[in-house]
Image 1: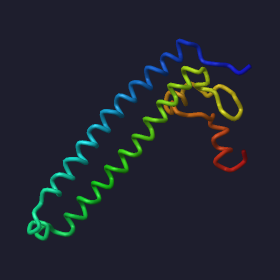
Image 2 (image 1 turned 90 degrees about the vertical axis):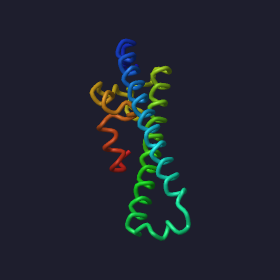
Image 3 (image 1 turned 30 degrees about the vertical axis):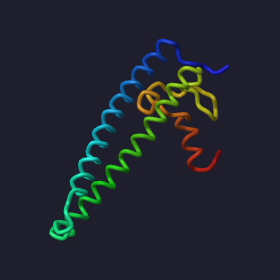
Length: 130
């Protein structure tokens, strides 16, 4: 049978994950507010003032808006992965490699709590050896 983390360690991981999720939720709120602010300021322009805005400024605004949407999407995906990590803590599979079923080192799990593969298996998977 594969080794598992102790309940004490799992609680440390859980606290760390929940703290990250809170930070991400705050970041997403800020991004959401920025998206709404940028959208409302450009949406409130009259027809005449649209033509007075320099094309480069409009391009910059558009780029910033797109960047914020991409960041929001990325943060949302990471948040969902952290939710899955919490589920794995609850079902007892947290910290176990999905491929070799060895225990993933604690340092890796603290840095990448949504990891499902040890470094060796992850590298093999990337190279297409698995």
